[in-house]
Image 1 (cartoon, protein in one colour):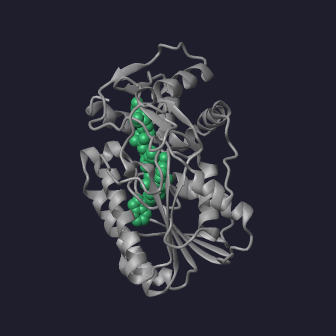
Image 2 (cartoon, helix red, strand yellow):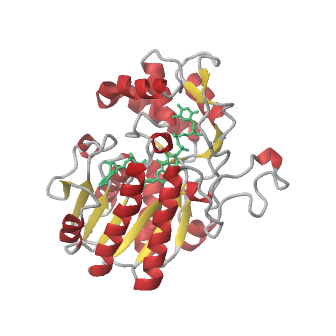
Length: 346
Ligand code: NAD
Ligand code: DAU
């Protein structure tokens, strides 16, 4: 197993990247130094790294598209794990430009630097590159037959500007591996939930709506299915792939957590003591993917990974508790986020 002493975590002040940084600090003392390279967009927050030892974790505020800065940092590192991205589908439907810039151009800058200095690269991607699947009830194997979940070699058919930009970045990484010998792996994960997720996203939006006296908002019918995984299980999987994964390979990360949006909202309402019908149906997302489902067999069998948080109700309760007790973390942004959604009819 390779030993990484100096790791760069791009986007490490965001939701999932900051979880990975906290995971390394808590579990891998052999890592001497973590450089978080983060532009601190609306989604990045230095508070997500609060309490971590300053001698070990350094935040560099900067853009992954800045080749000089990236070169300067990468030449001193053993590995780069790239979480930096524009990550919200709804935003990509309003303005795709920053998605193209950060997700495609930024990835290219990083892999060029890793190629130049022969540094190990891990690319964080999404299951959305595979498009969507029919609902289980419309499938012969009821969702468990061959081809009824995403597998690593499923065809790419992204639906939104966000997922198309992530698909492009995956393709670039694969090309750099094959053409230039880049030492890289890719992981495509399903929907994450847990503390520190930006309140524009489905679960924290509904929790903070209820805490603010606003009715939760369900897009369209609410039958769309997402495959939920706790962000801490995602971080453990990424570490496993970084340290034991095979160069050039793609690993899918998922915890068999399929639920439709209506079911998730019903559980949030119940856990927060609200009536089951205390929500609004709003305009659907254009091109809204119907169902995601991950087949994580490769990760489980080849790398021995298993999710630890398998009780969604319990994970959701803990997430609700976190947003309830960390209102200073999200309160200031709530009105602006909701005003933006209202403008869009959502
Ligand atoms: P996030 O929006 O919470 O965080 C993104 C971080 O990247 C922020 O800190 C932001 O400031 C930073 N950033 C944005 N542009 C940058 C740039 N040009 N240079 C440097 N930093 C920049 O996103 P997230 O939900 O934590 O997602 C992280 C990664 O995981 C993304 O690549 C996303 O595609 C992927 N992913 C997310 C999920 C999910 O459910 N959220 C699931 C699978 C994969
Ligand atoms: O599958 C992985 C992806 O999961 C990641 O690549 C993305 O970065 C991440 O944002 C997430 O994408 P989704 O579009 O699935 O997540 P979001 O939280 O935006 O929406 C989840 C579902 O909830 C989706 O079907 C849309 C619906 N929704 C969303 C919001 C914000 C609602 O019904 N109401 C809402 O208010």
